[in-house]
Amino acid sequence: MKKKTVFFCGDCGHESPKWHGRCPGCGAWNTMVEQEVATGPRSKQAAARKRPVSDPPVRLTDIGESREERLPTGIGELDRTLGGGIVAGAVVLVGGDPGIGKSTILLQMSDAIARSGEAVLYVSGEESAAQIRMRARRLGVESPLVSVFTETDVHRIIETASATPPGVLILDSIQTVFTSDITGSPGSVSQIRESAAALVRYAKESGVPVFIVGHVTKQGAIAGPRILEHMVDTVLYFEGDKRLPYRILRAVKNRFGSTDEIGVFEMTGLGLAEVTDPSSLFVAQDRDPVSGSAVIASIEGTRALMLEIQSLTGLTSYATPQRSSAGIDRKRLPLVLAVLERRAGLSLGNRDVFVNIAGGVRIEEPAADLGIALAVASSYWDVVIEPTTCVFGEIGLGGEVRTVALAGRRAQEASRLGYKRIVLPRSALSKAERPKGVELLEVGHVRQAIDELLSPRRRRRTGGSGHGGGAGRDGGTGRGGGADSGRDETDRQPDDGGELFADADVREVLP
Image (cartoon, rainbow, N blue to C red):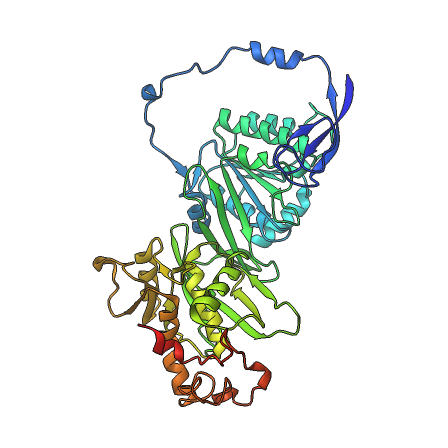
């Protein structure tokens, strides 16, 4: 058998006989890695083509409808993320940073499934049986229906599972197994691809659900070819700072349920504990209100969450001001800041702006735009937004506040948690969706939201002068008023006409 050298793309698995700086398949840079592959007669492939087809083609209309039965995992938050439980023959890929809790939750799931009477085969290529037993004792996993098998040859794993089919097969991890049909070390692109293909084939033929643990790269993607995520049925990602106790399990792909569904957990000494009311977890309830903080109503999958957006602004010490964010789309922050400067009159060209989502949560939806804008404006003027106020809405480039999906669910969650005022886009709620006992402030422009939430409070603070005072443009005492009256003169920022911008003027110019 001859060997030849080929180059594989680490992102998409594209194969090339020569190295490329940019992958011809997906366009990624510096992802081609060199590997040796064996070549020889195609006897195996020819034999495979001659095998009879076990299931002949049938018309779609002739296929009988079967009742969907799912196997509960025994962990409510995991069932929510999977779409209601485990589907027979499904292949689930679980990814996340080292130490974030992938093996922990799967071992806890093994115990819960075993307690329901289903056998579980836990295959480990990274830990010894004694090490797994030590961790299981700490987590309280004592069910005799959980079997541990330490093996890295994927064919032996499949043979063992086929001899005594379990209710669920768990492999930890795909980067440690290999197949002898091809050359290459475990963890290489070709080995990951072929080993995953063998496990997917076994799951579909036997009906045994397979959970696969996948390591991630420093960029946060699962290590190995991108095709691995296309081969499986469901992809789950663990998110969160492993130095903090909270973890978020997010479904980014699910053929049998909703995507972007999340489960929230807390890491304890006894493993991962479910957080059934995450809204109260991510919003601080026991501290004094501060400026630069706004609570938004976000939707993750089918769940409404209350999240706290924190912002901090200050005069920059650099030629180019810093724009830093954590937990939101980095491209979204400059867009919101540009709208605030052009449409709301905030002078941010010489200020550093920092935005963070408290609790280590990450959101992508544009409904957080209004919360980001109000948090930045609150920090800019050092004015506190009432803690009982919740906001949501998308901001357009013209400053208009656009409606968002599932506004009724957001409002109901805010009402349930005791928020007294909700700032939302106009006509976002029908009469049936309007919660009782809550003030609904419908706005059409970001300047209107800033005016309603911040301008009256600025007047009360400053007494009609200084920073936000009524006499700002017509002879007031500049931008420093109230608690900020001693601010240095360098904080006085002229507008385009050369005059000082008076913050309270925002209210007067509104129609």
